[in-house]
Image (cartoon, rainbow, N blue to C red):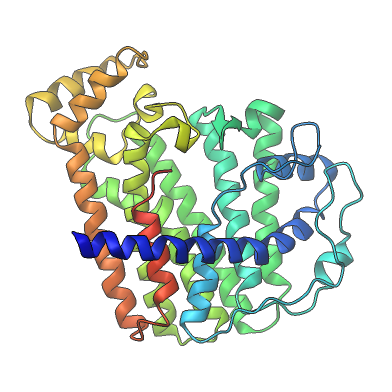
Length: 378
């Protein structure tokens, strides 16, 4: 126990350093890319990314942790690249939504980036495309402690801004030359298809009473694991790694992604809203069949049967009901099962990484990020 705690204490500053360095490298690329969007799309995207408020005034809102681009760059370094970023010739730091913004020439007229930097920015754009759409589909009104884009700007514009970010991600990869860039674009495009399938499955579960554990884990792999796997694979591709290593990095990220989704679902029930930025028990309020809930429903316990009656009613939960229903999930074993599977997939990820990158020093940043992801509170 002491060893695990000591490792976590050592990993947290290192992971924080990796994330801060990633944000410093990737933000200028993101701002230049978003700056090429039409005015309305640029406004909404920049608001969602925390660069300005709803009126377009620059602010210091949260832009997320940059986990996925950090995985790209760490994977590139682990598989042989130095990851140094090039300078942006335009000198742009991103204008406000109503400014002129970087031009088309500005986006394409940059010096070559460090290995994986375009891919890192592309992955972050795809991630935010999914967040914009997920908030609409889930009806979430808060993200990162402020109104979601759809609640601030309306559903149609939020959806369109998400579509624009997805297209922008593929365009970032397309500007790079060589077969690695083509392979990266193909992987990211297929990843988006997987993400859509995973989200479809997640939504369809809400209409069914017979959701099984195997299909729930498959949904988690498609919805979350595919993008983390793609991030690690793109990093290896940008470093010129061979196909076997690229596939192994993809598998590492997928296992990590499933663990990530399990932890995310735990936080969706028991997370502190002051930390997560979302209302307490938001998943339960909407009667969402998250992984801990499905495990509880399949438990065959008295608490599981009572939980099934609650879900069969189809009536959204009140704040008064939330603590009792969360307790039902826990008593039926859903919380322990989800935490146990998260630990299992974390071990699988770590073992797979050891095979792909035998040098523990080279894999150090990826391991630190993995531990941060699976021991997070937001």
